Image 1: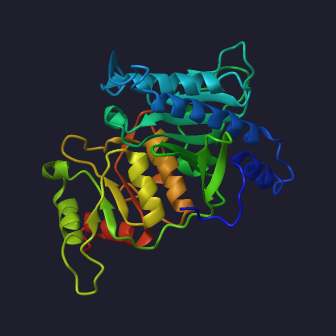
Image 2: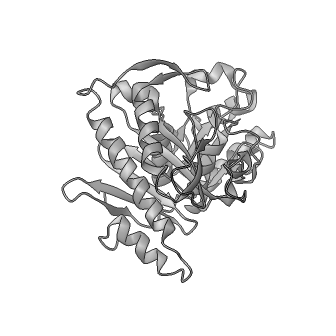
Length: 337
């Protein structure tokens, strides 16, 4: 399903966008070229995972106490080694690394700060379900030649200058925003290029789908339980019941929500009172994309992009999607409905 008025490659699209900014240096264009190169390498490994025996777990435990999948580790290494020598980045932060990833002294430093989840939805790797890479991009705030510090990464999401994700499924799709709308590109292996496939994505004001893990119902707050039960009730206006759609890969669930509307919800619960998704490299990039498409993203009380992170791996509840649906969910959560 192609929703475009023209055929254009990602590189050409970015170059044309650069022409609207007379002071542009070309650094962002180069950064995106390097990042999509890493995405193509990860997509190759995902496609060949079973053949190359890189499905399954390693013996390592990451900073979150989770056993690391082989493909997680490979994707993380691909992004680091594709980006750390380019001269565009000042520092990186990843879900798989406890500390900041500094740029080696033998390479030049740039002005950008890259945060990323190298392989979101990794619990689905072994069963061939869509997974993805999430990224956010900031400008460095520290000064001098010394290594960057936490302040460079712990910026509120509204300061992102770009955000996006790559999906590895039946096709490889790259979705991104620079604050001027959301566009999606599909990789065509026959020509070796990402081709514009969705132009100016706009999320519907209201959808027909809700996406949440109902296996956690017993751990939810009474307010959120009430909201989900409400969505499943038949209404006289015909808007309800909603249909449940839950894949378990955040990028896949949110990609569907972005295109078709509705709500994606990952609330806090009794086991995770601060939420489970990571604010810096999951919630913030996804929130920027959804807002740029006309939707809303909140932690249940406050706008996600206004939150001030306190540590790299901070967690947060996340509710995002169509404007009407998120507002209605917040009304339940705050006891006004």
